[in-house]
Amino acid sequence: MDEMITVYLYGKKYTVPSSLTIMEAFEYSGYQLVRGCGCRNGFCGACATIYRIKGETTLHGCLACSTKVEDNMCVASLPFFPLEKEIYNIEEIRPTQEIMMQLYPEIYSCIGCNACTKACTQQLNTMQYIAYAQRGEYEKCAEESFDCVMCGVCSSRCPAGISHPQVALLARRLTGKYLKPEAKHLTKRVEEIAEGGDEGNHEQVCRRAEGYVQQSCNRKIKEDE
Image (cartoon, rainbow, N blue to C red; front, side, top):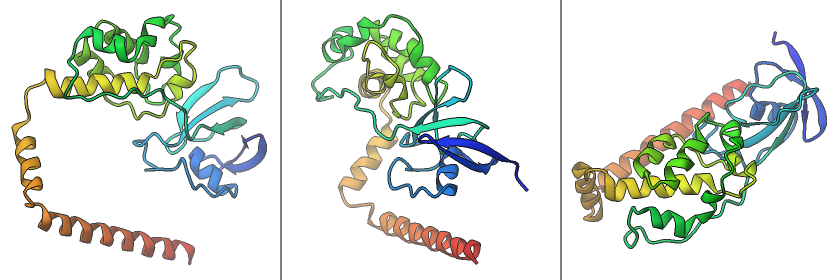
């Protein structure tokens, strides 16, 4: 039998098993999640969440699907945060320091508070990859930000209004397009798909997906029984 602990979800008090993730605790408490629940495996960033332990002052950022509940945890989800996304054509820009200055000039207003790094749900050194972007070191920025899931928690805590995930995404696109060697096997595969050579694989993937869905439904039925 799991230990039962107290959590506060959107300000309401609930008692839940200590083994649950925050997302599971919401559902255990009667919430029907229709958004902000994505992949449920720590990859899509849709379940961005902030929480504070009662009696403490630190505000934490996390992903609800992969973070266990704690006793006296006060939780609020952050299903969407309005990141500033500039429009550009990757074919028309180049990996110069000036392009980052043109598209995301706010990164030069960074005050070095490190709030973004402290808030990151993936424990990335967010302030460091912004520093790389400032200097036009896009390969380093791409490497440092590679595991970003674009949940936006870092930006929600930034006093300079920086859209960290969008800056990182631009750096990764510039790196992949211009700075890294061409992945010839990938280019070849894209050409094969464009020529219609993927029909068999597409059908195979669809059949496999149908099988996974059926297995999941059968498993759910057994659990309910």
